[in-house]
Image (cartoon, rainbow, N blue to C red; front, top):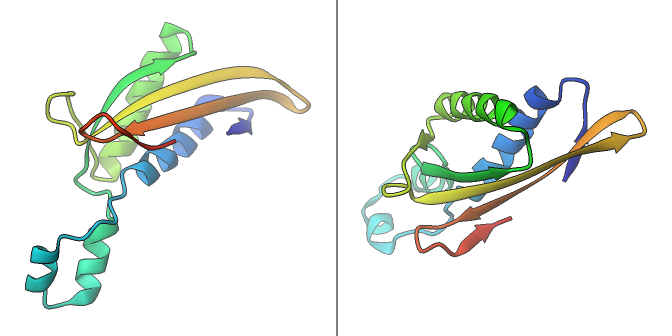
Length: 127
């Protein structure tokens, strides 16, 4: 995925966070829980909500160290606003590895990025 932008880190944070959220969705339903829920609409919403997910960012490859720190700070703020917990790897439900690169594009600088999201068994769940 790539984006072209004048303010690369702000736009990248928003786009990257959207992809992280997409990888944290859990559409599985627990039949024991489903049997005890009286409101089917509430069950459906709970099954796909990323709120409360514990996520550990294990690496971010590509940007210079000075920008990596700022990016991590912005990403943590966005996660907090969406009630997603940035956790240490021992307690995380999902693990995220990011890869970024910048290159010249027709209208300025473009940033290409990939997010790999792994589950607690370290199996890739989303790219």
